[in-house]
Length: 371
Image (cartoon, rainbow, N blue to C red; front, side):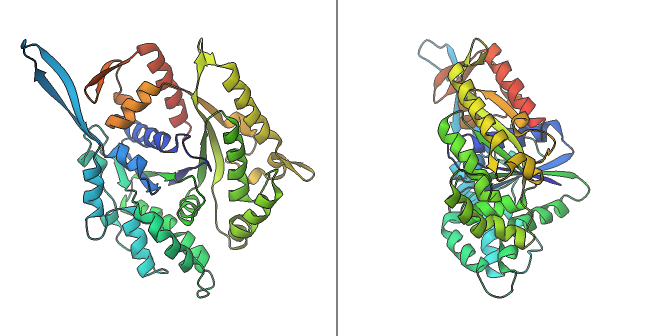
């Protein structure tokens, strides 16, 4: 069992999109592996992408010429159907059940899992989803309060491990099949984000090449490991609130695995100078984050999935191809099914050119191959 959390302390960097790509492509490439997506974001963006549906219709105009266009539904109906079940067939349904019995694992987790192919025929059958739910935001305070109960003495550790318990139960449900878990996180460091991170073995950090992303990457390391930030107050509070407590209570937290520089603007096939400059700045920040008596990487190699490699060696660049990204996310089309040529969105034709599409596909495939 391997579990990857996709998280950055900054929104809009492509966490949900990369989760969608990773899950769908891995499931397509390895049909003997059950790939579970657990959506720990109240916006449920990756769930929406997976549950999209579309159909080709043919329109006959007045001159009796045939115009093919696509009608697609952003299948909120699918999410509402899952929310409307008893119990809710979502991650919030699972967490509600845990709140009712906080310190006793749930034996049967099947009611909280769906198969996206039942809604979106373009997806592989070995892809499964624990759907996101806006109720997460409402439940978060109750979850936090439960984690602070004085009895049992390890209440915090048990509560923060609820999603890890879910991955273990799903692994058992898959029997002899291999499993992979993709956990899409909210940018905040709310309790439900902490549950996701505590369930993961590895952390994927998407970012966009801008200075706010550089600060956000520093915050990831500070909040999760209590290390390395230039703002000592953030580091101090992180150690008190999460990192230090996780270490004290023996809670496993994920290791830094891959940094994905997303939506890189290309000029003549290469990253533009502006993007490259910021990208290099982020690499330098990670390589040289200062700790007393040395850099963070030299002193705390245990927080890296590949401890012998510099953090900058775990960078992958994804070029910006906005049209392809929109078509995939709006229509629920996995990367392997994306075709060059005309595509229809809301009755309008969008052209995908083969050369940039192949570069985009190659970069995303390289990313998935890292998992």
